[in-house]
Length: 250
Image 1 (cartoon, rainbow, N blue to C red):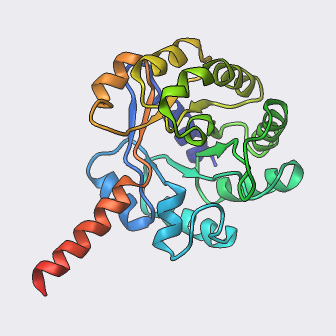
Image 2 (image 1 turned 60 degrees about the vertical axis):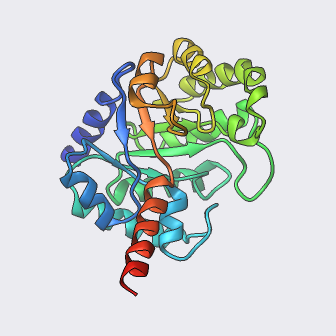
């Protein structure tokens, strides 16, 4: 437990605005080992990739018990800090949510992504309800790095309207910080100017999803980002390489 606490502290320290941690998202023990051996300071899963690798769809369709086993194998395979994309926590809230998070921590994770969209439903949880859910997550472990994800930008497919979401985004960042979150994740937002605004206003270190040629590590670092994620891209690329290699041999 002392070792895991230190890993959690080390993981939190890697989130430096202007010098972002790169998390090239993995999906199992094998991919985690490959990235760690390449020199990664930490590893993190993407829920879509983990589910797809096991023949499931995203959106908590992978059974929780199966996910816990995967977390255990990854944690036993690599020595670096491990963060798990835990989607909505497989529960609406309360003691069930706290217990689910505790299982992931016991399996060896020192961080999780926790999103505000209603998994299996429509829309997002309101700020107060999501804050209550975050408090339930925090109750599972005082050292856990909770990367609070907002799906505001993913839900709004028209990027020209993303500026209209800024006020609510910043309200959520501040509320989630008060509720015990450790970081703030804004996947779907690619406008570097808007990202810079969020980094300046957020009391939490900001995580972005890397999309498009303009979103280089250098560019998002200048905007003040503290963490870069790649989501399903590594899995998709790996599977494409596998298929292409087979085709070249057949």
